[in-house]
Image 1 (spheres, rainbow, N blue to C red):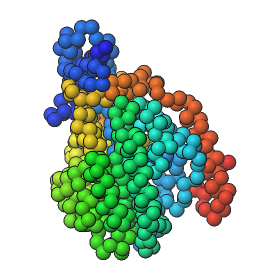
Image 2: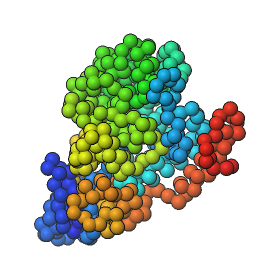
Image 3: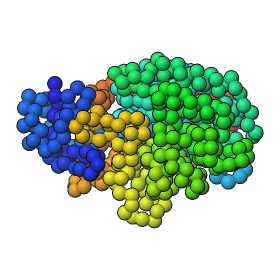
Image 4: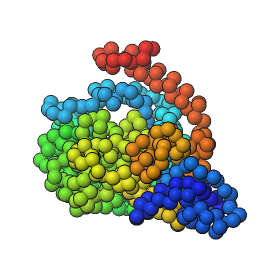
Length: 460
């Protein structure tokens, strides 16, 4: 049956950023079949199921092109434990390890992250992680669209930003590559095409040249999207310079890793010559604005875009709220540019919708135009902080909240309607995550008295 949402403010995010007030969107199966005025679309589909969108906005869903779902376990802890930006550098992104959890507990935190993502209007997610197969079924059941990228690395010891010499573990790299291929063979194209599989290299300082060449070759073999953390922290830059004698982006470029189907996450600690290399290769940069703000670092987005990069957006660690990401990105770029008008809300909204879908290899998504996938969200505009609605995209980018999203559709199927998530047991997941999280952190601190407990930590 055709569904027509009518009477809404429709932000199409088409090439002209068209907004249709008293507009309508018609959906058949998994596709948008018409977008226009309510009068026009209702006349074309008189037998359709009608959904009154009065007082609502209809927009494309957000595409989160860089996240690690299980990191919700570190919420409220890791945000305030960023590594140093000046020498001496230390290994890793936090002085505290993540508490160990079993696969069932890990799955709960991934589900918790997807709950937050749905509630803030996200319809497509790139998950960068290890052991994805253990929770892939749970992700498929959420109804969200996923690009799953199993991670590869072959540095035997340490983590990103480790100043210690690189010790290669060939067997580790081989196991990672085998895991990527196995996940692709089993999951790519499943869940009616909502689940797709790409490839991931962890970071330049975590991968040997041989492994990076192997990952690139596997990307070409699988005809897949690839991703990598790049110039994330200054310790990473120092480690690559010490080990490879060049900057991280130069390292990737010289071994042929850069390409137009690569998503590079962060790009915060860069020299201009690196930005130009990324632009020449037409890579996508994931602007992870909220975590960048928490780290006290920001990429030069205007320069990257000018040089030829596609800009998309991601949440990264501890949060999945793309509404926050969009607004933070707007504010950070205006402060960095010292320009109160650039970028525009419409530009940043495009980064988080159309550009994200295209970066993930989905040319038929991210905009409300006929023929595209029916991935959309409905926003309640009848809120004090959104009234009056005069420029709906600017209104929502500047003032909106994740809680304003009342309905989410993916592939023409409602996964949230009337504020209720239809594909997950939200109450159970939230309760379990609270219990598991407190117990896991308590076990860690009980077993490691050498670790400093963060101030304000909840008592056991």
